[in-house]
Length: 212
Ligand code: NI
Image 1 (spheres, rainbow, N blue to C red):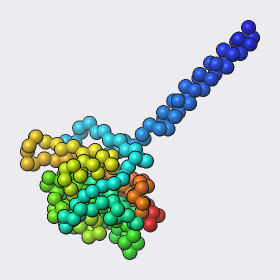
Image 2: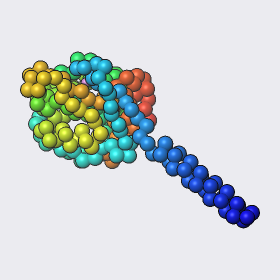
Image 3: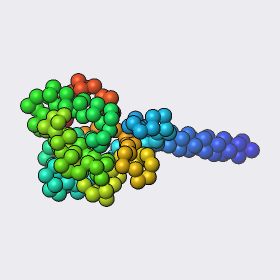
């Protein structure tokens, strides 16, 4: 009986241990980042976005401000700061771009070692000749990229960017709800870390400086 009891106790302990292990593993591997979303069209709507750190980034094919097709290979060799948005965005995208511009300013010549990209989530209106000058108006080093709707859907998926047209179907005046992170990628195009658009220019400059 004593042996049986010990066996039962051992089994119980093993099961509890396994359950605890699974619970903690679930906690560790559940995705921690529920970030801010630019919901300028409909503030107060449900906000959902998830990012999986190791899964962010990868190959893309987009159009540069001159309309030339470019890929991630064209930017390899330097870390990239990748930010998504659209030129009709009333507040969040401009705020994020201002922070990036201020951080570049603080970095000074060191910023030459970084490629800041602004990728539109609204390719219908943000053609290369629209998004290019818009991004450059914040800092001429920021490269605005566009593409076909399919190009944008693919790069958005690669960076786990939430983007959703908001407003009446077919309406000319619409907004685009989108997540608003800045992604720091290393010189091989691999994800390093991300920042919310609310990051301070000082913090961003420090973090970027560490990566250069
Ligand atoms: Ni925006």
